[in-house]
Image (cartoon, rainbow, N blue to C red; front, side, top):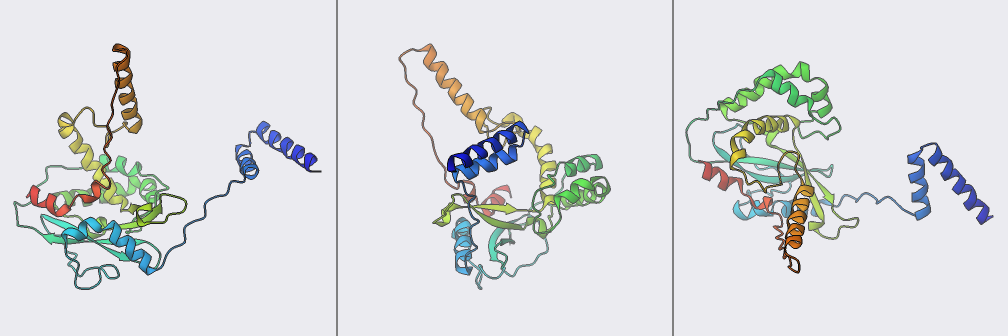
Length: 286
């Protein structure tokens, strides 16, 4: 009976392959191999959330004193009125939904010359940027869906074009656009420490759209000063290109000089971008 059951199951999978039912074939393979989907990690208690907040915010906490009240449970009391030439400290806030809202509080810097941006975005540019939003991306703290921005780009390009140009002219960004919802995503099936979680920030799609428009304006200005061997943060270039270049250079050297060797040294800068302090960048720019 066992042999007959296995033969019947084999014929069933062969029929699914003949019918091009790939989904059914994968389900059958998972059943045969005993594969089980990893269970979603349960949301911890408030202490676990506070520990994650401290861990994700550890580099800012070293340079900025905490507010009088607990920064983990309540947002710092600060004015939401945008100010000129200011940097922002990040203070996390735990919410019952399991997400982490990081409120950016302005830190006033010495006044400088009034902002005056020569960049003027057209309605056509804003329309194309809105249509490039991915419909299935999660919404940010403002709750505006990317599907809405993409589907209604023709109707919304005018008002958002005016908003973007006003923001660039005044040098101010709405407070809600500078707020992120941090979601901890496990790096391993069974995380055991805080470093086993990767913080994924959900930001406003409108802010992302404005950033893409400004980047398209800045990239041609700085492209001539960039290192030709920089593979990160470049369009249509990724890790695969860096690996291919490294292998090509090493193999070319070994072919031209038989019997020679190649030594490669790797540097791992752990959390390198997390150590960047916006306060210091703002001071340098001013």
